[in-house]
Length: 57
Picture (cartoon, rainbow, N blue to C red):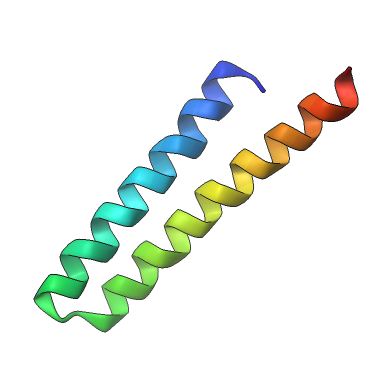
């Protein structure tokens, strides 16, 4: 997994979780859903990169 892609994946997860929690505290369902989607996209990016690493070896 390249370092830059790993950082992007982790950053998306952290930002998504933060947005989700803040929106939940404020009661904003739309923004909460966007945060959940961003977090999921970060997890998917990380899984993709791990799969690339697995098949490279």
